[in-house]
Structures are given as C-alpha cells and as structure tokens.
Length: 106
Image 1 (cartoon, rainbow, N blue to C red):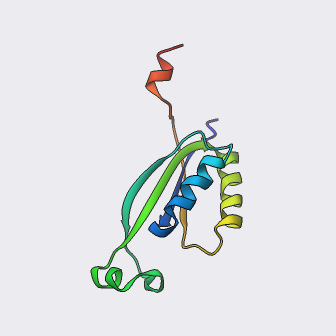
Image 2 (cartoon, rainbow, N blue to C red; image 1 turned 60 degrees about the vertical axis):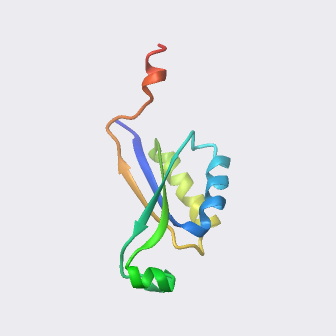
C-alpha cells in the first residue's frame, strides 16, 4: 500500500521568511515548493483593508511530498510552533512522486 502524501501549507505572506526557515529545519522535509497565491473566503478578520476591498488576500503555499507519518509529525510541530497564525493545511494521498533525474541514475 502506498504511504505517500502531499502536504500543502497555506500561510499569510507576513510569515513567509519564518516558515521557510522552519521548513528547512525539519528532518522529515527533504524539499518543498513555494507558490504565491491569493486566498478568497469569508475570514475577513484576517484581511487588511485593501484585501477586504479586492476580495483576496496575498498568501504563500508550500507543498512537499512525504509519508503520512512524517506529514502528521510536521502538522503536530506546525500546530505547536505556529498556533497563533492563520495557517490552512491540506493532506492529499499521492499515487506516485519522484525526480526523473534521480530515477535515471539507477
């Protein structure tokens, strides 16, 4: 049975530098992608005035693939270390993931 999943972490742009440093320190995370996104929703309390007017907030999404156990470990630490931040996360099952450059070296 495949134990691989995608962990997606969606954060306010103000937390970007702290999150990058934090993710780089985590043994479970071999690497990750960061993507600038816009969040849309009903949580206006977290939005700046400009964001309320435009209906979108600037955010950063980080994605990494890892085992389900490592994803749960990361989420536990994330909840502990960033409890006061507006962070949304998702865990998706993955059928397969890898790097073609490394697969060709076998």
